[in-house]
Every structure is written in C-alpha cells, then in structure tokens.
Image 1: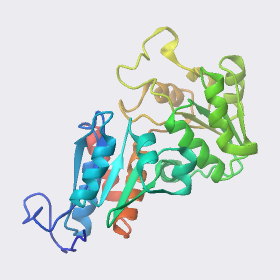
Image 2: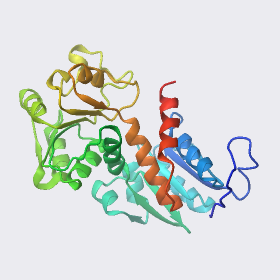
Image 3: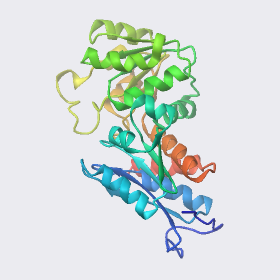
Image 4: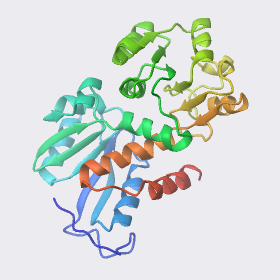
Amino acid sequence: MAGAARPGAERPGGEWPGARTTVVGVIGHPVRHSLSPLLHNTAFAALGLDWVSLAFEVAPGEVAAALGGMRALGVAGLSVTMPHKAEVAALVGECSEVAATLGAVNCVTNRDGALRGDNTDGAGFLASLERAVGLSPEGRRCLVVGAGGAARAVVLALAGAHAAAVAVVNRTSARAAGVAALAGDAGRVVEVGPEAEHEAGLADLVVNATPVGMSGSGADRPGGGWVLPPSSLHRGQVVVDLIYSPRPTPWLAAAADAGAATVDGLGMLVHQAAAQLELWTGSPVPVDLMWRAATAAADT
C-alpha cells in the first residue's frame, strides 16, 4: 500500500482516513495504553501523509493470525510490544541482524506480503541518551540492571556503541549471564548486593531495565523492591530508568537527589518509534513534534 502525500492536510477533521489510506499499527496485550498511535499519527500529519496508526489488542496465541491479517489486509507496518516480540521474531520471513541476535522484533514491515522484522529499541535508547544529556557510551563504564528484553536491547546497543565495560546485575545470575554475553568481551555479571553497589559507584552510566518503580510495581515494599538501591548512585553519573510512568520514577527521583543526571524512558519510546516510521515510510520524521506530543500525553 502506498500512501499519497497531501501537503497541508491535518488530522483530525480532514477528508481522510479513507479508501486509499495506508494503515499501520501497534500490537500487544494489553495495548490500549500505548502512545505509539499518537506518535505515529503526529508524524503522519506533519509529513502530510495519508497514513493512519491504530492499536490492535492481540491476545497470547493469536500472533500468527494477526500477522496473517497484516498480509491479507495490506497493513504496511506494525509496532510490536509485550508480550509478542519473541513470537513475532519466530514468525516473520526475515529478521534484521539486531532482531535475530536479540530474538525479538518490535517492528514489522510489510513489502507486498513479505514480512521483515526489525528491533529499534537499542537505537532508540542510544538516541535518547544523546538527546537528553549528549552522552555517547563509547569508552564508558556501564551497569545495566535487569535481564529481560529491554535489558538485552540496551546491552547489545551499548556494546555496539563501544562501551568500555557493560556489567549486568539481576536477581537470577544465570539470566544475567545470558544478557552480559551480548556485550562480548565487554560484558560481565555482578552479583546483587555489595558487588553491584560497588560497581554502580564506578559506573559512568547506570540503567534500570526492570519494571520496579512503575506505578503499582511494588516499589513501596521494604527496601523499595530495588535490585540496585538508589543509594549507590552519585553526582557525575548518568542514570536512566526505562520506565516513563510515573514521571519521575521513584528511582530517578532518588538518583536526582544524589546529584546524578537522570533520563527516563520517554525518549527511548519516541526515538524507537521514529526509527520504525523511517523504516516504513523511507522518510526522515519530525522527532521534535513527536517528542512534544509524547511529553504532553505522559504529563497528563
């Protein structure tokens, strides 16, 4: 499906979406809270493209059917969120090198029925660091907390950006080892407790890639539920929490009180979405407009 450019067209209230509108969307479970359609549609309106982005609730076990529907209906692209990234990677016809390495796809592009999977999470993370604090990981000592999909994407991105060291801490050491391996010789595992706290004190960049701190996640438990207590953080560091709700998270608030420069996950969300849009449309996208839309929505 090819979307015709319509300079000067505005959403909402214009003459389209219509029969010629190119459709993209986001799939996940749950997905109705997603900011992706807002980000995508903000960009389409600014570019004057006759495209629209929608949210599609896809229950576990229905991913293959959803991808079949994507082909049958000519949906041009899908953003993929939890819990479907690994299953989509196994089902698409082709994966980018990054997506194949991670075993996770967050973006599917439909080219005449051929589905290609990509993963823009790591690129979005690096772009968010540059935007927020002008930081390049090259030559930096980094510590990543967590061993889920977000941690894997961040560790691989840090290694690709030539970080000097990438330590991984997680409550389950075996899972941490699998993540640290993505960084090659730069990766290693540190144990929860004094070792992790010591490593945090030495790090230039500390990234929380766990859900602890999200509203209702148990951050109010004794000790805050933290894998790495924010008391380990200090001035001169850049501290990132990949969560963006609430703003700031309790972990980032504590890091700021300790004097660290802080970055939440909203920038990563915006930049990974921008990278997806470039894959789908082949055009540069208005990241600043997307950022303003995301900030307004997240702060309401």
